[in-house]
Image (cartoon, rainbow, N blue to C red; front, top):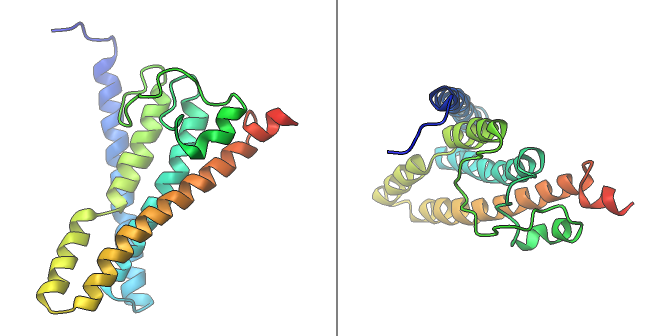
Length: 188
């Protein structure tokens, strides 16, 4: 067995609490958005869940770039080979080493990044979005013979999620380019 790092248990405990806190907020947001969409606006239940999931996809794109910019500047970027990061790489903003760093990894050098990512991405967005409910509602639509609604749910959720993530990444990139130390501030 390897040696344990000092404070490792405390760090893990704080991270777990942060993820739980974010997850609780995300679950509350999912319920609130679903309730408003279905009971206040009058949309079908599956449309409310689609809105929640697509919104979560958009937010993960924005938050990913923000976390990389604010907390992960000294570590190998998880986006360094992406076309979205080309303007940032051209300015020297992205770190150049180890472009194969896995998407899910511990931020060993920065506990804040791990905590913020845990609270916002794993917790909040993980608690807010729901693939299991999407799947259950899809099966219920199919069982009930609501094939058009099933098609709208499946295609809308998947295509909408991918488009929303792409838009979120683009917005995140745009925000990062305008922040101090981003590409536009270094070219001025």
